[in-house]
Length: 355
Image 1 (cartoon, rainbow, N blue to C red):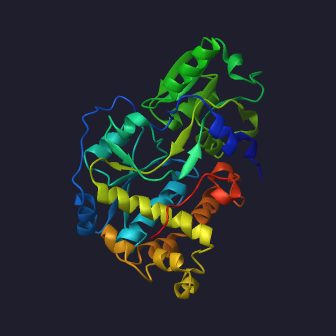
Image 2: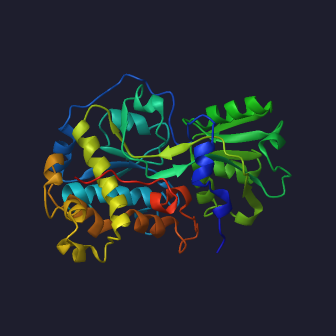
């Protein structure tokens, strides 16, 4: 099994990175009309509908993908299931809406989806002009570059005069331009409507290199004809904190999504898993009792059942279980946790207190 750990950033490397934040995953050109929702309306709609409408990726193995049986699977998909479990008591009560980079923000603005879980970077413009609110970061990432192993390219400077592929409706092009201008490197950009078309062009030699989030590049090894014929450069072009996004203005719904994410992180810290969550219902630890809804009614504060976190953990698992299930050592990706570990392990994940 190929180990891709060398292609990922450490927490320290991310924290010292000074490149501008952006992301292959963010659609640009969205009309910044500051469309907003009224607090409470999304939760009410989801409860009345009995189903969560989740905007997802269907072309990114490990994060959002349709398997050979036609089922949606991946890291982001499991967070959609956790939200459905916490809100509706049923992790399977999800309507998945596959969205391109160009479509995704409009789908949130128009109410087509209740939550966007599509490897989306949290940036200032999206948090303001585009009219989104973000829940806690679920995956810390950074933009990278893939080239042929025999291309002779070992750094961004070596891309002088080459053609670089990017996906339309993303900020990778802006990040790329900023970095290359700073380095004084001339290059040509070729854009593609979707990830599959971009990868096909790259494998055919129509472009010399392509750029996206490092996690997306690592994910591509699962679909490349000859994975060993390609490498990811060590250069990192940006910070990419990936997080769920909802429509601005509905504070209650943003709280709901946020605290379900926090619950999965906190569960891992407490050692609470799908298999042993019932054993913790009798815990003497008041923090655990509050998390699982045994005492105090944090769920009621959110407009949910008191056992919302229990249901998410029982039906989907804690953060670490989700990570290992789709990206961990028993998968084809074998991605070390690194900065996506818990804070006490040197990572960046940290839940706010359940009290």
